[in-house]
Image (tube, rainbow, N blue to C red):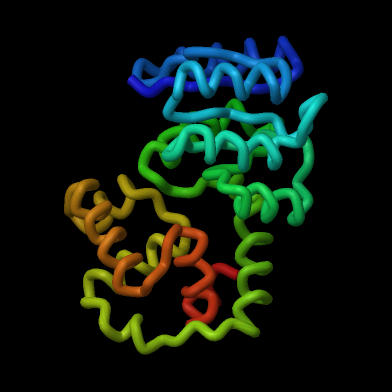
Length: 218
């Protein structure tokens, strides 16, 4: 069972998050915080698998807190929740180390998927936000020095999985589509990142944008 800490200054919203999470036996809320200080204390004490963090906290931004928590508990996964859908906030959260970004009005529909993705070491964005992120990555890729020589060294199966990952397809869905196990997909993902000298799924999407592999979804 994966432990979660909730950090949000609205008691009612935290209660709603707890209710959503407790519907699923594979997750449990192990602690809460009403501001960044309380949240940091809870995370340091509990060392949870995941922290769900509000972007706008009374004493620090969720982005600032994300940097602190990633240092305090290496390996922790962080999902940012916010009222704001501005691209700069989203990119800032991802750069700080967040594994997901949800708009609060989408939480009831998306939270469990975001938690599952975080456990798998994947990134999760609201579907409405994903296209904006891809657009920004495409812009950034124009000045990138990335080369496609390493991509050519991937096996056919690795290239297939690379494309699916770049399109935001979840591990379980890739496994179903290719009739392989989720563990095999995870192993392929690790090999792909290693061969391309990439460090995260965000890097992988950026690389795919540079190669022009995202034209069909941009």
